[in-house]
Length: 63
Image (cartoon, rainbow, N blue to C red; front, side, top):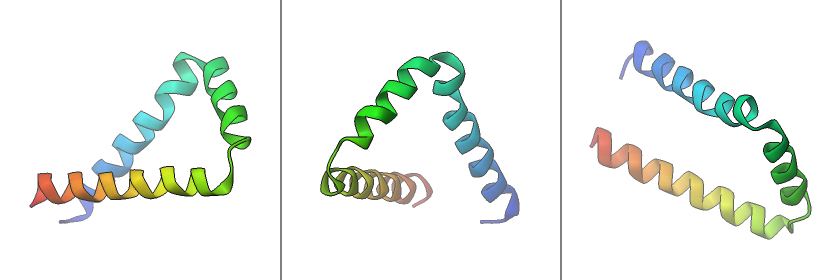
């Protein structure tokens, strides 16, 4: 892996992160308000699941 791979991943992250706020800002705001009401354990579980799914996908793709 070199710097271009890291910068490509960062650019893709920025594109994906910017999609929902630019397409449907009201829905994103409502989702954030609902997420703020969830217990810490649920948010932690969702974060852990996402982290593991991303790591497994990266391992599978980059092998």
